[in-house]
Image (cartoon, rainbow, N blue to C red; front, top):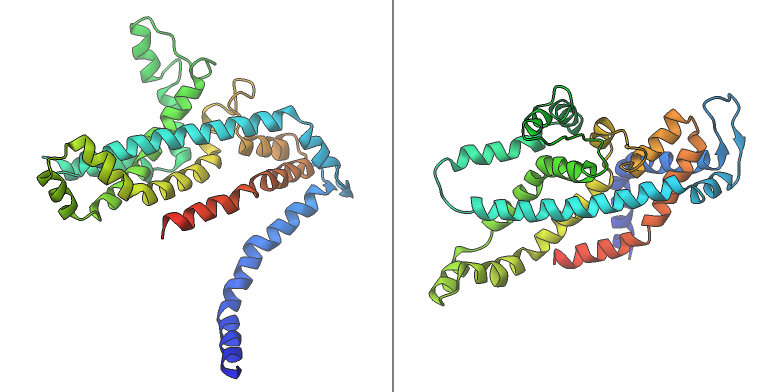
Length: 288
């Protein structure tokens, strides 16, 4: 009994620096966020006054908040599916020997090494209606292209996101493929299994935990997308491509209402909180 108590004290002492560090980085900002959400904190006013739940009522009644949340969810789900499929396909291609594999492998990983904001600037120049390469080429074929065209903007954003982050899914899937014993494939070949059957009945079931983790990581990361879309479209045309991050940013630094922005952030956390136990449970089941 005394030994167990000493072990607990020792564990607490060893964990104390980490707990303090987490308190500074996590607990304190959360406290400030909730405090600001319950206050009337405007950039145009010097005095901060209590607001109760007024900011939360305003957020819930704001159509722009729900529109931004809906677009964010749709965008995150679509890019996760697209990048997962493309990454899986690339991993299958590279999971074999062919000339120039090392060079091509390095080229595939280049996009993920570039900062998203820099990639967005490059996209902005390439897709510029006046000096952009792609609009110029399309104009020669009689096609008018504008990134702000309501018909193409969503497809364009998904494509550009896939160009940068498909390599992330590819790298993780490729690493998982390398851990599959070759004896399994040899046994399947002896049994006369075709390549498609091997993929569906052997490779996919084995990679299911890895694919679930990759999907979760990309879903979380794409849900936080801000810089690329903000630089490319600013949330436009109108608010059609406004993510929840852009909505909160504009509310805080353009509208100047920090209380409302904090209330939107807290509301978002409250909406997502019930989903986290299910995600964590699925994650724990997949890694067993």
